[in-house]
Length: 316
Image (cartoon, rainbow, N blue to C red; front, top):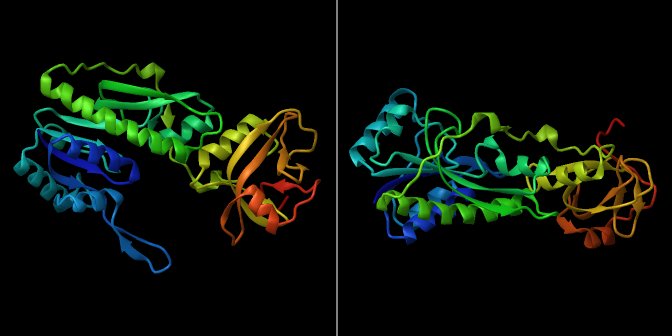
């Protein structure tokens, strides 16, 4: 099958590799333009671009598929390639209907949730922030809407009690690779089944904002724990300790903690009280200007004492 692949971040790399390994012909890859990163603002290729070039697959990086001369040129190129299928995974652009209509088998999107739940930009982080215990990936036929197309296949996984968004991201990426190979096979042999989404069961996974980082320890411990897990490793949960920013990457729930919200109640293992009589043990942190460390290593260089308070604002 002739396939055009559209994707950008790390999440989209395993599915691309899986399609290549399965023997399908990836004619071209579309990905977002290179962006400047780091102190030198050097232009760096997207992970999908790096993967495609390593397989000698042509790469295209239009600013838009919908607007102006660049959008028109991209559409003309896709029509010239005449793919049987377009596969999309975290591409970062909305495809116009005129492109959705080009491939014989349509356009299939790999979405990192069990649709119709968690449509939108941040399904992996949102399921953890909401305390969900199960999620998965869905292959859907793309339509004119945000993650609203007919569902084709799903694969589900349980979410670990202490699993972070970054850890779940990596698992779902691999699951997406498995799912897209199965989906392509079903399209080829004529066994693909399409199921309309029940809009009444949908919810929106809004984009995560850096302003969400600071942790409110007056909330119940489970919500604090989910906040830490859901924002790890980006943009990362944070608090102020002795006036300096502390990033928090990992935590564990601790039952029966006595202390004011944000108070360090155990200086040996960095347990912090929350608002419901329970707490969280911070197991991986990063001090301001320091490195990301397991808490035991962090405490060798930063002395904390019982009774110190973690604050969500420097003004508290």
